[in-house]
Amino acid sequence: MRVVLATSEEPLYLPEYLRPVFEAHADAIEGVALVPFEGGAVEQLREQVRAWGPRGTVRLGGRFVGGRLAGALPGPVQRRLPGGYRSVERLARSYDLPVRQVPDAGAPAFADWIRERDPDLLLSVVAGQLLPEPVLDAANLAVNCHGSLLPKYRGRATAFWPLYHGDDETGVTAHLMTEAWDAGPILRQRSVPIAADDSMHDVNRKLAETGAFLVVDLLADLRAGQSPDPRPNPTEAYEYRSLPTPAERREFRRRGNRFV
Image (cartoon, rainbow, N blue to C red; front, side):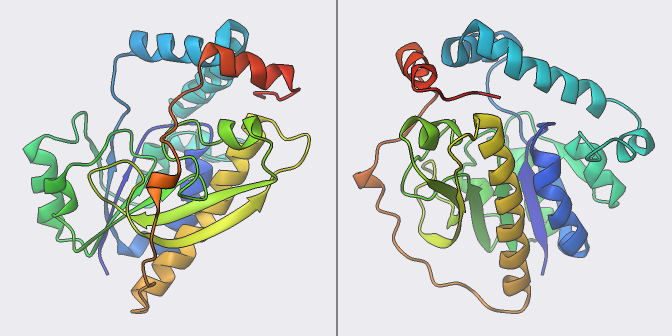
């Protein structure tokens, strides 16, 4: 079985998410595409300040910047850090996996690159852009792993919304990809409990760990010729979630929730 992975360069949670996947299935992965989120650095910072507020942005941003700095260290140095690699690219290359930077997922060259690898599976784990039809059609099967129990909390900030609504669990869903966000039929789900004192950072860590187990098991089944039966993903019952508004962020903090 041949797999192409589409993901992004996020230093805090994705290396932890992908390490077990590479350990178990690197021999099946034909390439890793790093697809960044849309918008320049200034636009993304503006979004973060609006969603998390100045104080939240400083606390979350400080962790992110520290992760980025650690991710710029040489691979052998990162490997010895507590928790290991902070760079998805360095982690992938440590398993001798080819890595491609993909600034624009809609560029024809990206679909061509996937076709050249003739994958049985295109797997998306936090790819930063919606993958268009020519990219999805370049593989026999296209699957996304989303950090919620779909159809709840389609979209962004998947660690925020379960805390905001007082849920006692969340999880990860593997679903078939379509040209709409998080809307394809569901293949597999795995839940994880939310503790009363969990912060958004804690939930993100749990989603990374849970997602890793789900992907490892899903790939093992697919490689063994066992395909899960798709079941409906009734997206019409739940709205798409974007980043929180300032009012939602203030309510989140008023209820005693924490970002980190």
